[in-house]
Image (cartoon, rainbow, N blue to C red; front, side, top):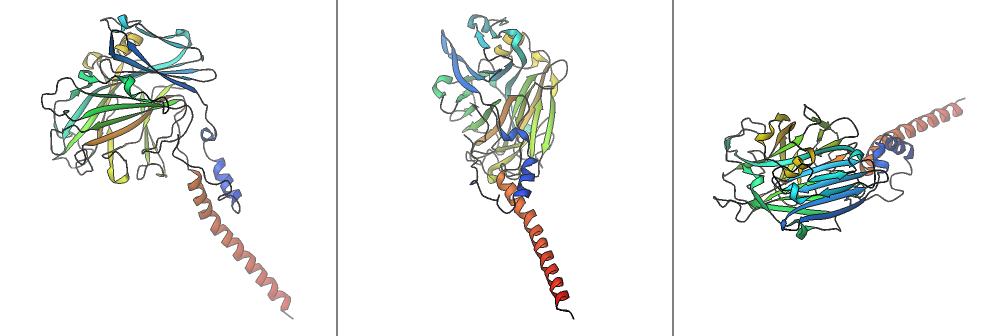
Length: 402
């Protein structure tokens, strides 16, 4: 459900309808109607070990299907596949998937219907001491503690968190070995949510989603930092559509209505359309109820080619693509030494969208358009009224002259 409520039907349209209608005509056409999809969530479990499972999100449109396959086998990963038929299906062979050669262990059929495919792998959680840092963009980031390899985390049974009403589920984990006890009362969570239509969540950063996207919310909660003012970061790997890496783009706006003081939207684009994208605002939050006071900067490093053997391997990626060659990786770092920071409440959250097609584009809401209409229309009306009064005054003077 969207957190946005439409104004009453006649609000702001009466006296200034020409101005407001012209502004509405300039809004992106994508906001005037989005495709809806029939969305289903299914947990696919290994019958021999129910802690080994996959989350399959299947979003069916009129002439296409999107498949999101989320996995905690190895490092957390998601496989994104778009097909040109509403009848494509996912096939999983657990024996092959868990073998040393998982080729063919996971397929989307029919294979010839696949129009786009790629993957994201969340490989490591970094921690830095920011005590001597002057700003969020400092390089190096300060003393680096040994990173947490997410391939060495133990994750919950995803079935327990599956919520068909909100089309969501949560992977929650902690290190299998935790010699420092940092995660005794803490966890790292990946909450996945799909959408059947367009809208915005009520919770910041209120990313605009469509039926062609799903959202990931990452939350680090309750883990004890190893420094007094620790910053955390996340390493993200993906597959290029060839020898090069996907492109990174920044979009800037004059409007911060949905994320106060944040005028930027970052995107990773895998190629020309129809293609996939990852989209996020460069902001994280140090409190569960995200607000401007708890907003932290989110810095991203350039996307760089990475040797596959240096990254933890994902079985679903190897099974579908047969290799993790052409891997690229980048880091996201959350917070600044000046605060707010994770140390405030031992809480950190960050959100992103993953989808296919044209990324959603923010536009001015009817509320802002109405304010602009008033701001632009009132002076025009005043000038018009002044001109009429001057004209009437001049006419009256001429009529009374001898």
